Length: 288
Ligand SMILES: [Zn+2]
Image 1 (cartoon, rainbow, N blue to C red):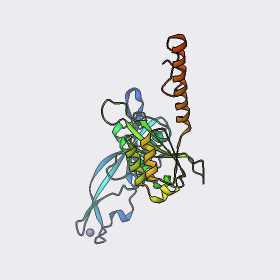
Image 2 (tube, rainbow, N blue to C red; image 1 turned 90 degrees about the vertical axis):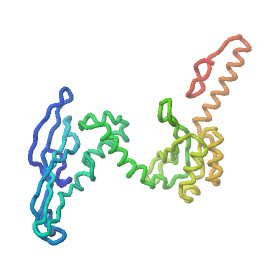
Image 3 (cartoon, rainbow, N blue to C red; image 1 turned 45 degrees about the vertical axis):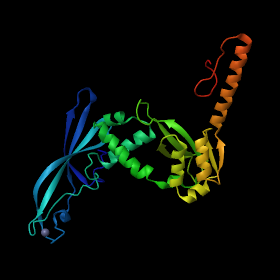
Image 4 (cartoon, rainbow, N blue to C red; image 1 turned 180 degrees about the vertical axis):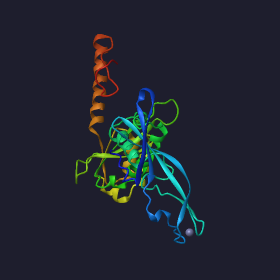
């Protein structure tokens, strides 16, 4: 059974199956921590401990095939016979403190959300857990290992910046400023997303640049952007060695919009009625 319990420091002791209506079942694996003699040995006095009590901790684990798998771990509380010191089984290999999802299940959720663009709700269905549990796991791993990994800034000679609507809601901030590294593949690393910060102002971009190390700003040779003057001013102030350029997408978009305006004007002048006009994406087609 490919559960990888040995890597988690757990030993299976029982198994049962619980139905979940039309969603299939959940396999419940009863486990105990692999405890050698040192688990019962007191660190304070080297005395031998007895098991004073125990409780069951339920952990969401990686599904096996189409079936959700949860671990029911019996956690023991020990008490030293000599000095009375108390402690519990160490589950650090299986699950971070206070989490209800094993590390393997949490990283599976991160891969599904980040690499396959699956929704959090869809990711919660397979392991039969809550939306909050998957969301917490993705945020904690993502912030710690992806957002917190400063190596993504290394070697960036080109910088791309643009706005993006990340929330379609009537209230609250709708926009983020997105910074990407369009530097061609180099040293085995592809072009990549660098960061996203709240807002779409020149101030947001300038503050983000100012927060980067001086070596990063000095290494950037080109900053590609749309025609927003705020981004241009921010780049000129924080990365003065870099050249500010319009990116190809916005060059084509602006040219398309201007062409359409001319076409509409000529159409009105010659035929006295409207002509096909711009669309939101490229400035071509549609009606003006
Ligand atoms: Zn002791």
